[in-house]
Length: 101
Image 1: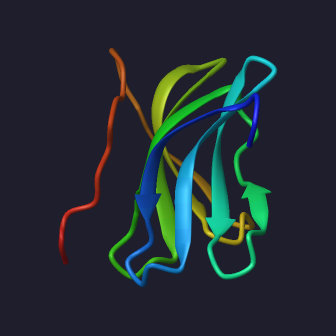
Image 2 (image 1 turned 30 degrees about the vertical axis):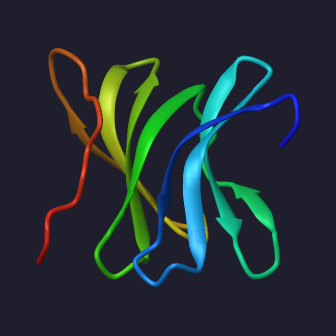
């Protein structure tokens, strides 16, 4: 991680993974670190993603993003296979968080 920008870390509900904002070459994306192996996976592809928040069951990460359409609420599965753009609205989306079920 040396020389990189890493912030907004949050543990998965079971404590086995850490999601965070990973900055590299001017792009800020959501990344996932598996704590048992040290494997790092960058999950998102847009240039300005922030404020990751795990779902209560640990299968999905909610985050704020800014893309060509503006600010939005988005979610991605922890394996990176399923992506959702959940809301588009006037104004900015910042620091989303899951509530308890």
